[in-house]
Amino acid sequence: MLINLSKNSSQEEIKEIVAHLNHHGLAHHVVEREGIITIGVEKNPSPSLLEELGQLSGVSEISECSSPYKLAAKIAKDEKTVIQVKGVPIGGKGITIIAGPCAIESYEQLVILGFALKEMGISILRASAFKPRTSPYSFQGAGIEGLRWHKEAQKEHGLLIETEVMDTRDVEMVAEHVDILRIGARNMHNFDLLKEVGKCGKPVILKRGMSATVEEWLLSAEYIMTHGNHEVILCERGIRTFEPSTRNTLDLNGVAVARTRTHLPIIVDPTHAAGRKDIIPAISKAAIAVGADGLLIEVHHRPDEAKSDGPQALLPGELKVLMQEVRAVAQAVGRSL
Ligand code: PEP
Ligand code: MN
Image (tube, rainbow, N blue to C red; front, side, top):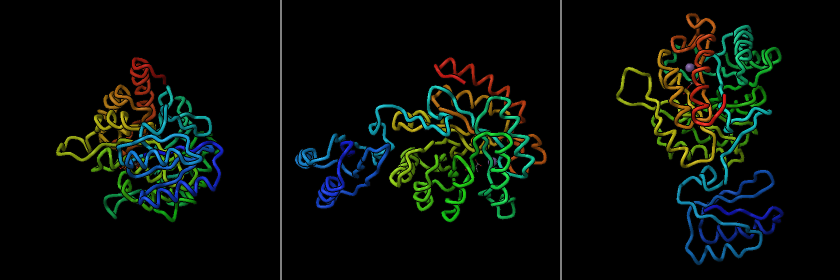
């Protein structure tokens, strides 16, 4: 159940409603968005309790909600959420392309790629300073120094910047450096990290775990939202299947299903879904056709020298061609790029 309070509800009214929920053993979260208080309640109560709650002072509207996530559910909002990141919309009519290297390697790399993307009309540069690598022997990322390069390079290219955060202790510091935080697939179930980014005050890209169901993915979004952050961008990046010819299997069903269940923006990462560059244009077009709001793509100006994921990175010129192809599909489905 979702309880929306009247715009000018008082602290006493909120306390009274919360006391009622506690009295009836109903787990809940009180959240505030744009001055409006919403209470997400775990269960739908009995009809008599529903009536009782509806009569409490300060309650404006109650919606029953059968899904385990409430704030992320479609019913919580009349329209799709459009997240404005310093004037760049994610989730609107336009398709948002976020691109950049897998890992931050140097200040120069970020400046070169930033300008290459800017020239293509891309507004957001991705790049990770902290890398969740399968092997402890693999490059682990440039760390804090890398984040400083990210922020310094931004002064040159002027794009918005995003990066992955892996540790609860780093959230505040990472949020000071970038415009958008990213939770990687391996951390989708890291609930302490989700709670922490819920308090960070910056938009968060939430990747779907490689073995997570759509419901679990949306419940992870709910963790971030119940901790105060409504700016969650879901990202499908492929799930594990038996198929060995690609690194993961891009779950387009999952994108379409999530679209029916949530108002949040959904983007697709074709790079980690494929793990090979040759099929990235094909699956990117499919993602947009199925309703994704954007793409998160790895690009590198010298992929042969990349410290991670070089073989799957597109060259800037290849990304430019992909954008043209994706634009045609976007237009066919009533979107723009
Ligand atoms: C990434 O985008 O840099 C990444 C590590 O992807 P994922 O978390 O999807 O594996
Ligand atoms: Mn990568």
